[in-house]
Image 1 (tube, helix red, strand yellow):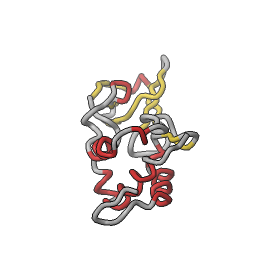
Image 2 (cartoon, rainbow, N blue to C red):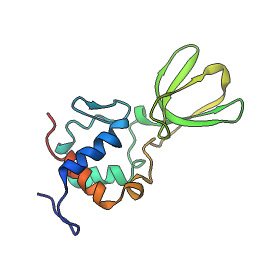
Image 3 (cartoon, one colour):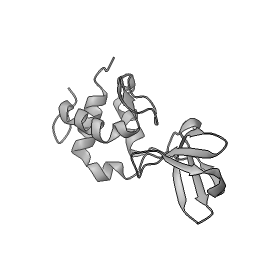
Image 4 (tube, one colour):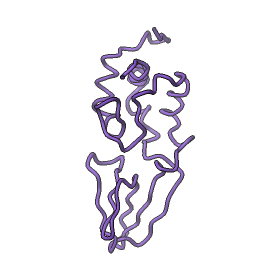
Amino acid sequence: MISGRGGGPNVENGKKTFDTVCAKCHRIGTVGNNYGPDLTNIQTMPRRDILRAIFFPNEKVDPKYETTVIVTRDKQTIRGLVISENGQSVTLKTAEVAEPVIVQKSRIATRTKERTSIMPEELPDTVGDNVIRDVVGYLMVSHK
């Protein structure tokens, strides 16, 4: 059991948080989405590496998960992960809305990439230390 100053993690609470927050982008087994890295086998990672990935999401970003920044002709800025593209449009997963955003290519003024993740850097501050502890406890349980 993992225990810290605030006590051990509540794995059930961690699962609930994963299902409502993390699963918007990540998958464990059959739960969640494939926008971000699949976390099914994450329990093989050291706990400190899991925590680093949560607290510092921009530290190591696989190029396939880099943020695309689109500025439209009417000056709207959309930051997200490109999940599909065709001749007419680009579909992005953003951190702001649950559903993917479709942008018509005819509306795009500029399109660039940043070596950053769409995972919000302020997420740990938003959810709190106990929630992070519980989620990491849940992630460290086998999900095969």
